[in-house]
Length: 92
Image (cartoon, rainbow, N blue to C red; front, side, top):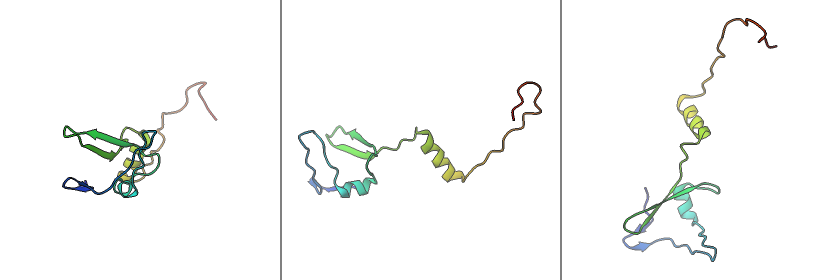
């Protein structure tokens, strides 16, 4: 984790709007590697500090599929042979 401040001296400032919104400065967005529509996590510390990190949605099914494809390369499963059709379930 890269720190954005030195001993009690913030390096980057942002101002809250009247609608309680803050624009995240470009330098911070680059460090967090976030873009529009990405989600952020805010972790409140006992010291009053707030840790901000990019939210990694590991529960998202398609993110997990992409992660596994990258790890194991493309996996193609052959269709299982269930044996000959035995009745009216024949399909064209």
